[in-house]
Amino acid sequence: MLQALKTSRSRGSAVFFGVLMLIFYAVPIFTDNFYLLSVFTTAYLYMIFATSWDVFSGYAHLMNFGHALFIGLAGYLTAFVDRYWGLPPIVVLPMCAVLCGGMGMLIGFLTLRLKGPYFAMITIAFAAVAYESAIMFSDFTGGEEGIPGISSLTESFLGDYYFILVTMTLIYLFLLWFTRGRWGLLLKATSQNEDSVLASGIDTAWLKIRAYSISGALCGIGGCVYAYSLTHVGPTSMEQVLSTTILIMAIVGGLGTITGPFLGALVLVLFNELSRDLEEYRLLIYTTMVVVIIFVAPRGIISWGQPLARVLKLSGKRE
Amino acid sequence: MGLIEEILIFGSIKGCVYALIATGFTLIFAVAGILNLAHGTFYMLGAYFTYSLFYSLGIPLAPAIFIAAILVGLLGILLDKLLLQPMRSSHSYVLVLTVAVAFAAQEVILLTYGPRGMNIPNLIKGSVSIIGVVVSWHQIMIVVITLAVLLGLWLVLTRTKYGVATLAVSMDELGARFVGIETEKVFNFAMFASAFLAALAGAIISPILSMTPTMWDMPLMKAFVVVVVGGLGSLTGTILAAFFLGWLETFTGFIISPKLTEVVSLGLLTVFLVFRPSGILGRRLN
Image (cartoon, rainbow over all chains, first blue to last red; front, side, top):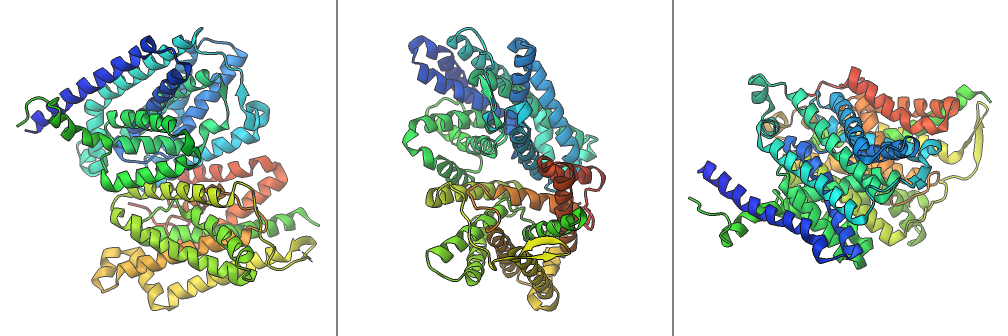
């Protein structure tokens, strides 16, 4: 029965996400509204951030409160490389992935070998110090102003749109493949009962360190694209608010599912655009939302999908 | 006016504030296993409540600080009962909930008081010269209040029934329940004391550092560092580490560069996590 449940769920969601992706790719055909397209671009970037957050924190159930560290690191690297060497984005992207993956490995090595709540604390501390340093060492980083004038991703706005969309799609598909296989299973098992995974001869610390490093590398790619699309990088790209927003998107969407944070990011970015009048209350609304979701639907809005799919007869036969 | 004396004195003042913040942070962790990311929020609320009590209600400063700290302590209990208690079994959700509360509080304060930095006046005006270093009376008051409060906490924890029960719960919650200790009451006490200490720290520092809606993240980070260096759950270790961090930061700021003071805590954190994750006086977490 479990197997049947699994396939019926994935068939339903595969249809849903296939249609969603088609819509994303088709949007520029129906509209050339600059504002609307840039809203979608923002959504794609946040999807990269939220899903790459989820691959570690959602599966291992260890909260990362400083995911924006990777966005900022990648952003500054992009700015430096672009300014001094003028390399094309396609070369800079892997550099960012390597830098952020390495940073993830370092932080993971420091904290994930230890039991206890060190990881959450260190993620906040590293992001906070990186933020402070970006402001303080203004000779290199431009201080609060940041570094403007990064060259754009492609020649045209539409090119940018598709570049970001394709990056997002690739990362999303990679994460689906990655988490639906052995890795995701092991990480989830570790979060439930670490001792029994250890007893099966698996080095759980190393497993977690690698997963966190992958999370960082993917977010680094997102951060690099983010910096190019804004043509600017500043300390705000490492702010605690950004890290927390990503975390809220992932939890509202549904921890440890990849598709949940994908949906959570889309919903919250669209909500954000629709509620421009409520701008000053936004953080208050977001935080209230996550508290309510934790109590009402701890598995996120994605957990509403199944009953919905059953009503719409999308999920096929079910025992 | 020697540099060493200056570093010692200003480092100690910094250390006092860190000790007040970090003691509460480690207390609630040791007792209830709550890593409270809203701890800095208590610090912030202590400052803003004092401001309102002093300027809007006209209560004299010293009682205003005391009342504000008590109010924040009660808020701490409310937070625990409303949000954290049902989720206490999950570390991750407690972390997320407290972060959500911290940001929500930041927004409420921003909407109520505005983004502008504000100050309250010194407890005692004027300054005095100690071994050649000019120190304001208020800074001396910070040291006096900290020492008095920490001594009081120590007396309560070791000499009263409540305190001993609290220590018992921090050692073994299940065992404490077996011998008839009402753990919920102990949690209330620990939460109150934790929030009270943080609020007090926020209130007595705000004549020196102006209060802003984002002032909560600095103490939170310092509390982390102090607690890791001192040993998670060890009160004596926490106090020692607080002074150590205070001196080290002041030393770095005076001798090397003021720009590096923030990096000091991270460096210390990294060194301790690599070489001695249980801290100076902590037990190993297992």
